[in-house]
Length: 428
Ligand code: KE4
Image (cartoon, rainbow, N blue to C red; front, side):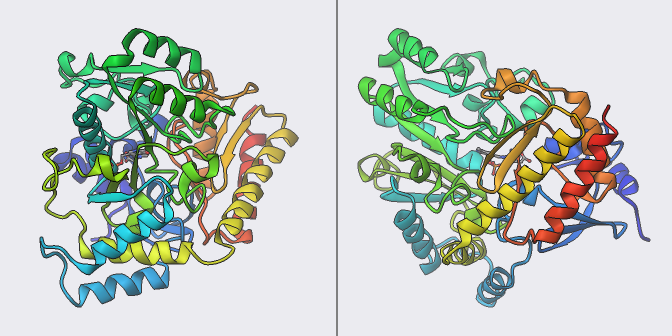
C-alpha cells in the first residue's frame, strides 16, 4: 500500500523516538505535522514518498557536494560491493583515503578513520586531553560538534533548534570541564585562558560555524585562537566536518591560512556513506592505540564502501575549476536571494563562504550565536513553509546551513530565487 509522509511518520513514531533517527529531521521547529519522507534523490533533487519533487539544499547536511548519485560515486560503490561490504581488517582503500586526506589538508600528517563526525570530535578531544594531561575544554556557543557528552554544552544545530539547554544525561562532573564562550570574541578567550590556561587541554571550533546558521570568523580571529593556544600549550582543534573540502580544497585551514593541531572531518569524505576522521601532527596522532595508549576503535571504521564513495568524491573535487563552479553557484543563489528580499522590502542578512551559506531574517550583522538568536524566527518559519510548498527543500531550522552542490544548475538556482521572491512578498 502506498503511504504518504503522514502515514509513514505515524508508524515511525511507534518504533523510533520522535519518529526520526536524528532530531532536526522531525521539522518540529518549522511546525510541520510530519516531515517529508524521502524516497529517492538524483542530482540536486529529492522526491518524497508521494512523488513530489524538490530542489535540495540539505544535501544530507553536507556530504552531497557533487549532487546525489553522481555516476562516478555510484560506480565506485558498485565496484567495491563486488568484493564485499565489510571485512574488519585493513584494506588498500583505507590507505588511499588516508593518503588523500594527508595530501590535501595542510595540517594533517596522520589520520584515523571513524564512522561519524561525533566520533571524530569525541576522539580528538580524548587525544588532546591525553596529550596535554589536562581536562578542560573550550568550545563556542552555537557551535555543534556532535553529541559526545563534553560537547553538548551551549551547542548549535539540533540542540539550538529544539531549545534544549545542554542535555539531560550529561553528568555535571563532565560538563564542568567544558567552557563555552561567545564566538568571534577573542577577549573572552584571553580572559578564560588567563584564569584557566594551564588546565585547558584544547579549544575546539568550527572555523566557519555552520550550526548557528553560517557565521564567518572575524579577520584575525582564527589566528588569535592559534596564538593563544600556542602560548598556553593547549591544542587547537578545527572541527571541519562541514567546512572540510567544502569551503576550499584544503578546508577552512587552507582558506584562512591557520593550521590547527588536530582536524575533525566527516560528511563529504564519505560521499554519503557513514564516515568521520580525525588527524593532525604525527607526534600527537602517534598517541592513538595501538601505537600509543589512547584508545579509540570502530567495527566499521574505514569501511570499504564508504572509502570507495569518499575517494570517488575527493577525486572529482580535485578536478580543475570545481571550486570556482561551487563559488559561482553559491554567489548566484545568495546574491539572488538577497536581491529578492531587498526588492520585497524584507530585512535579510546573508552569510556565505563558497557553496555554504545562510539567510538570516534580520537587519543587523550575524557574527555569533547571540546575534543569530535575535533573528526573526516567525519569518523564517513562514519562509521555510512557502519555499517547501514551492518545491524547495531547505534545512528546517534557522540554525543550519544551505548546501549548494555541483549539480545545482542555473535553472534550479533561478527557480529557487523565484520561489523566494514570491515567499518574501507574502512575509509582510
Ligand atoms: P555526525 O555525528 O552527525 O556525523 O557529525 C557531527 C557534527 C560534527 N561537527 C559538525 C561541525 C557538524 O555539523 C556535525 C553534524 N552536523 C549536523 C547538521 N548541522 C548533522 C545533521 C543532524 O544532526 O541530523
